[in-house]
Length: 185
Image (cartoon, rainbow, N blue to C red; front, top):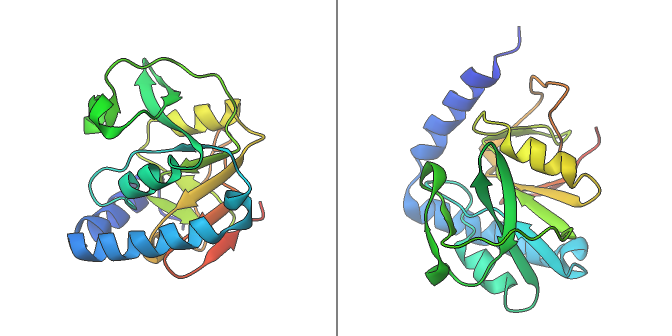
């Protein structure tokens, strides 16, 4: 019998939360290097990227470095959905919904990014993901379905299969500190 999304979420969060800050930084740096070498990323001009919290794959350095050569968009929560705004620097952000850094005065950008870098707690090799359970990114990805969706995860966050719902939007590529997974769903 497959485990529920809630059970899987809890189990993986316990593992992820037990990682040392140094290990998270080291693995995140490796993931960033793999991403930056990815042909699809090199060819992109506009990138939407989540702003990491806790022991997620760290994106603060990644966002800063991407913004030196590409347009970067970051999410903010508006009601029950994610919207995006242009990243203008970490000094223009404050703790917002769920403690995540968000723009102080967001201006919604309806531009379609070339790539959306998606957070997740658990992924499978088909690109399905389990997030925090609110469905924010699934709604956002449904609106931006034609863009390349890349999930960032530590290797232990990749499982063989996940319970999925009809509204779940899979990612196209997953990058871990050990490999690139081109998903087939």
